[in-house]
Image (cartoon, rainbow, N blue to C red; front, side):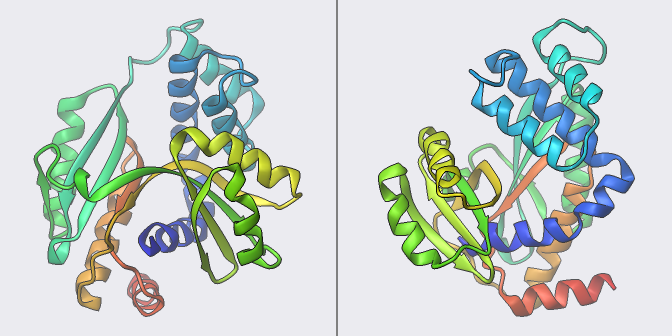
Length: 252
């Protein structure tokens, strides 16, 4: 599960830059729209919308932007095109698997651009279900600076936690998707500050490749993340601290 954990750390580091580009607000707005479209505009009864709104607030997204995104999702506002949720699958260097979740109003344009990014990044876009079987959908709650993380994780088994990982100052708890709300609520009751509560595709068996191939895959993932239509990118790559350091050095 280290691929998800390490990539999340990389994204946290570059979050400020994303906000400066305005890209983060676009993604958050689309996430809110989709949640409102699928489950209604009331965050009290729509947990996915509640999570999306909290994430947006955490990035200082203006209240009016959040409200407009909700109304677009429920159909109260008709501005903008109809968004479609899609997942693209492909391979990075060394055969590493990559899943790309997008929200687009033009699937042909997006497919062409995602294919180009894979090719330019030394990978290739694959057919549906080519790599998806290597992943399983999980709820993930990330806690920063947890006291006695192993003990806390064991306490949360009754709330739905199935597995966990301690990675530096972060504790990641994994659960079945339907248990994400109860697990997050249990973490809140214990007054533990969490940095994320989300649904993610977690690799069943992390792939190990050379450091050079790993860095190449991370560069590909970063270029995919920078595409306006891309919401999230997942990999089965086993990202070590050494690879993270080389990736940061290569960007400098």
